[in-house]
Image 1 (cartoon, rainbow, N blue to C red):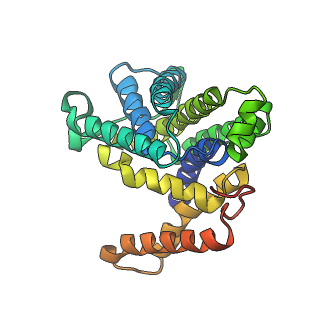
Image 2: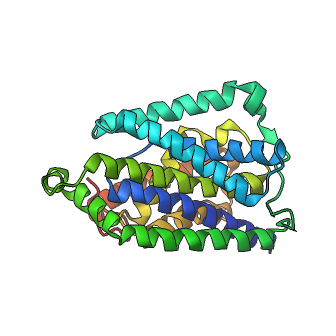
Image 3: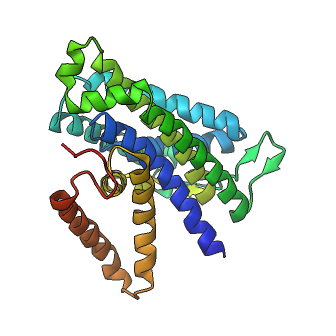
Length: 290
């Protein structure tokens, strides 16, 4: 039973991540390789707030979202004029910078040893979420709120403007819309809600280290979005389910530990290649990936 609850919690966490990333990638067409950096920032802020300051759930979430929003705003305004591969390289540089800080700022992050003893969430010090079942209920609650909010984002005038910008940015500019502001806001919103996933991840695992927030994790997140489908929520949920459940299913095949990880990468790569030919927008995507 605990195993099923564990899988459910991970699916919820990655659903929040993929939904948030899909706003950036699927609607505003900004491909980021720095999502794991924001996940790591939020996780370490969570650890510091809960361990050093003994803050409860709501204040910690607010701080995490503010920090992620500010850093994403700075990254966005400094790289917003870049397009295509150059923008990707800017987010890649940000990913490397954050990883290096997390790995080398040992006085704060404990370096490669990581931070242990992250407490369970508590709601105003009255209710502690200290079992897998209660944590799953909390994760499902956050996931549902995220889906509802992003549904509003996707189908609001803001979301429609992002879709229009994705299809033809110049045409949208001729209609008087400030596409730079749209890109900045999509980046800020995406990174802020990744903070929700950061909080859940850190408090559930109770241990974090920089290795969990490296470039490979950013690519993993992007794969989940691309496989599930860009441009809608169904694709985000499907992508999260796929990347979490596939490794678990393969465990029952009995692959040796030494080749299990390479097999996962081969499968992901093969699926992406097939999708590029037959479903460029992903399994449930309603937009072509350009």
